[in-house]
Length: 313
Image 1 (cartoon, rainbow, N blue to C red):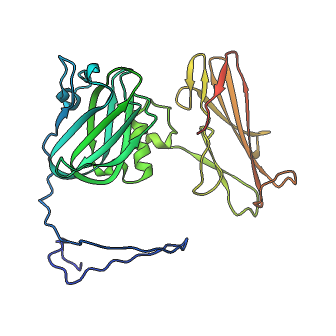
Image 2: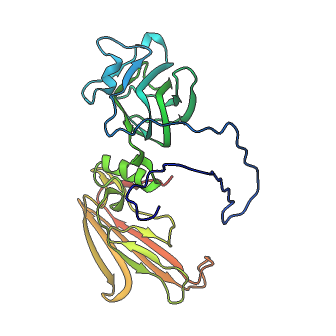
Image 3: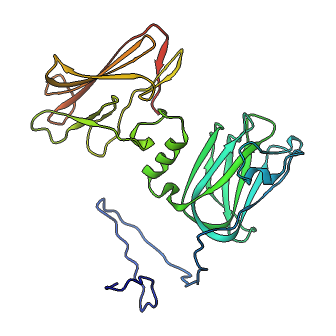
């Protein structure tokens, strides 16, 4: 764009589309039809408040109660009107957004529902389908969404009615990347329900590996393990009689094997529970992995209460 400080596009002589299969290769066809240029309205820094309408309401509640910014008020559907209900947000303008958040009230949530969008309020298309909702807060990622009308088609739930305390539109940054989306969820959750880094807190790591290995693992101060660059991570969480135990509510100690060997251990202590997480790498012939070094993680615990490890999904 040159040295000019005005980077807005004033004119264009040609338009080129480049289609690439990427590093993974592949083949196929891309078809373009009905290409048109459309003038967009000026981007506003402040958008009008959405108008919410519901297919039914149990007095004294109204549909507007689900979009008034007050978590203490809620829209309740009329159970006599059946399980199929619609909650429609009129944004009063065509605008871009990144997703939705829904705060359900109590057990009156929808376990099955669709998110639909429309430009004119007449023709709708489904952009998200929820089939196993569990109530509480739902975070719905809708990257690069742009429309005027957003509708929730509530299909089924555990209660005879539905109750929504608040449904809110989220800006584009809400799920600009998978990391940004999970960080948003983590910030809304109680501290310790997500890894420390996802909650916006600094986490310190140490390297675990063997000489000559193509990759090294990372072991965090909280006992989390990342077995390689860009791979998954494993972090301990424990349920006990006293509730959920995580990095946020236990005393954490760090040590090395025999006081000096590069085999780190993280130990949790809380109310009679002691959890030790040790990570080390080895070239043992009994190890079945194909990399030059194998990573072994040991979990050992002593407890005076019943507990179980959280299942991984």
